[in-house]
Figure (tube, rainbow, N blue to C red):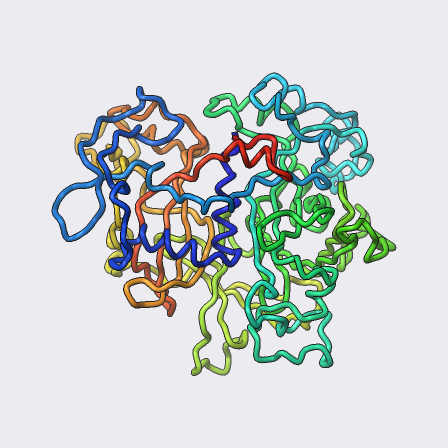
Amino acid sequence: MTKKKAAILLVAIVTGGSVTTLALFASIALGRDDVLLPPSSFELLQFPALSSNSDTSTSTSVLQSARRRSSSDAARYLNYDEAGPRPIPGTARSHALPNAVPTRRTIPRHHAQNKPYHLSQRTNTTRPLSVLPKHRRSGLPEHRRGGYDWNHSYDTDHRTLYLYNPSVVPLHNTLVGGNGGGGSRTTTDDDDDDHDDDPDNLSPTDLHELTGGDPSVRYVAIYRAYTGCNCFGPDPDRAIMTAGEQITYLAVALLDEHLDVIPGSDVLVDLNAGPTRGKYYRQFVEDCRIFVLRGGVYLLCNEEMKRLRIRRRMGNDGASKLPPPNVVGRRDDHRIPYVYENIHGDGLEITLIGHSTKVGGGKNFNIFRSLAPTNRSAEEISTGTFDYYLQTYPSPHRYRRLVIRDGKIDDGTANLSVKHPDWPDRGADDPMAPGKIPPPTFDTPDVVNPIQKCLDGSTNCTDPVSVPFFGDEDHGTACCVRLTLRGKQVMVGISHQKLSPRKPFWQDDLLHRYDHFGVDRFVSRFIAYDVDPPFDIVARSGWWCLGFADEEEGAADGGNTLAG
């Protein structure tokens, strides 16, 4: 049920400090010569065309060998599931957030496979709903039409909230020798005495406010809490998703060194009800990713970037560490700082202290950094030791410089600007242009299943061409951690491809071989980049699938009822 389970593990690996685990798997996937592979890793496989959920009717054929690119000429293939990462036993987590998402807003374990029950919960709330209904919009001023209904009552809202797309960031108390240093809005000269530490670190004051002085807090995790889901596999009508309002909330929790939720720390807020660039019904703020940059906590939510202050309000024992805010944000007062009202939970206080309403066009962006040049021109803005980049596409690699000013500046913006356009501009003759990027280190079923299509978009051309099944542009998942590949330091990120109902590219095949494929299926891969500009791609793994959660994860303390 919880396809995203592995995302908790994987994103925790990518942005949560478990570099050794990622390095081992990524090194194998990217073809490091000094990693010994178990004999069973590349055995003969029989696999479906695209997904572990496909039955044998979707298989293309029985390929007679498993493929890994090496000095051998033998063709060897890997099934997507076989190539997927495996968690270290005992480390996988499928979180439930009992305060942010109360029991009444979760699916009981015994109803996990009960689709009618899921459907019934999509409208299990009193009126008015979250979005101002159409029949109440007439005669209202323009700024209120389609907006958040401030009369909505969460006390009688029992609609299920499904947890998606976790993002985890380590606090620097997780790292040896990292205990402060980054300039911050609340930093003073007296408490910023660790100036030689990583400039991205929170100040000691901000770290203490976030953790409440609790040394067991090592990570901050965020989740998309959503009223819809596709839990029952391919469904052309997307019945559960469309059965009611599609509302996105943000859940925030603190984690310990084992990636378990710190008791009482999880809360739920509504970012779309606060300062943003669109009307509430547009739900622009979703799928957020969390970063700690130059002493500040940032969210990158599709095209919007927000700077937050997170403060611990309740301790593990339930005792208050911070009094309730005097004022929380309201419809008629979007002034910065803006304190988000907690929908559920009291463990944290989430305050918006700056935002940039559009850093790019699209979604799935990531942020990475590289040592700044020593010969920067006088007219260029300095961001200290490091330059920061907004990754817009992982492959072919496209990015923009992200100028993040010192965290002490407080002017109601997110303290950043983006340098346009995407750089570098990859031309057809560039070695990193599509088609000239290093081949994957192992092949998967799509390699022998291209799409035949007409370049002019028609369906009756005389000279169709074959194009790779997944095309040339990957979408971003996470970026980046450092590891050593063949004796050279590289940055490693993860990209993905999706069978999306918005762009059913597989239906372009003139032979109609893939018309039966369902939507909302994902594959992922590792990508390694040079650590210096222009950050060329130096290696790519083949595609692999994230797995499903084990039932034991749901049965454990703090486990999600949909695990399994």
